Image 1 (cartoon, rainbow, N blue to C red):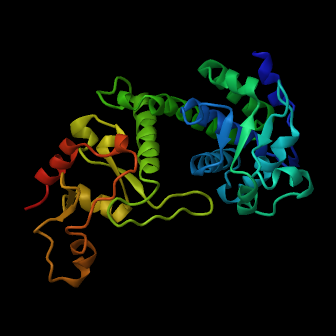
Image 2: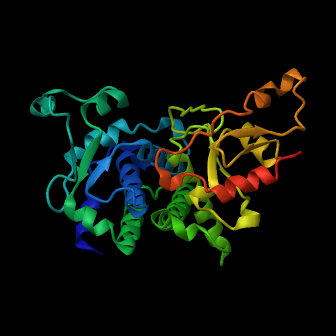
Image 3: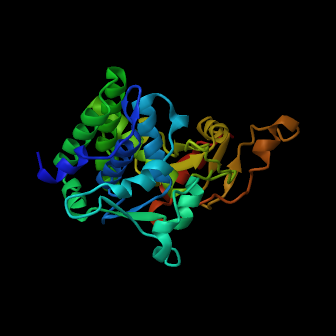
Length: 314
């Protein structure tokens, strides 16, 4: 085992009936997954929606109780643990708060914590180790077995989640690899997970048609990742072949009642009767602009949009 990982066995964790408290191990597992997905390229860890959602996913796998997850606790208390080169976790306090950070006391809510710091530095030597995929897997196994192994079914859930997350991360680091025929069935879940993650983040979790955006307190999203050219036709899981849509509009697009066109506007099928009041939620979409990702890299391809228009019910 890499000696830098030894510090992961020395966390100051609380206790619960089922064993060690899962807060710090789950946060570190979330950080490892995000490093392996290519979302953190330096020791500075952004406390963003992706990380918080990942923490909730892991907490749910470890305990079966997603709503009990409280990321404020490990985000704050991890600063008391040591890493191979110094503090394991060093908050990047807002400049006006930095001189008084130790006098402020524990933040009472996540919003209160984020007002103090929205990023933190992971120990640099540990970060360097975790960039290696084999060492990252060792670190995941170490954390799960050292702190989260008292409940065998939960350990199984957690191990399966991490295996899928790390496999998906390989695709997220290289989105171009998400196109092409699958060679093994085990690839399908990893590719689908990468597609969903990249698409939802590209659209900032906002529907590309209705503009609706809702994130629950335990980081579940209203929108889904929808293929433009269906995967069964295209074998293409690249985010440029996807949109973020609410479930009802995802259904409407897949039944060819609506389509986003190359003109970056929504079009409604003539099969939708405009005289029926119950159809207003679809009819009002006709001619509305398609919400696009801010980053042009993730915007849908003209070919994918043209495919949708060609298959709109006439």
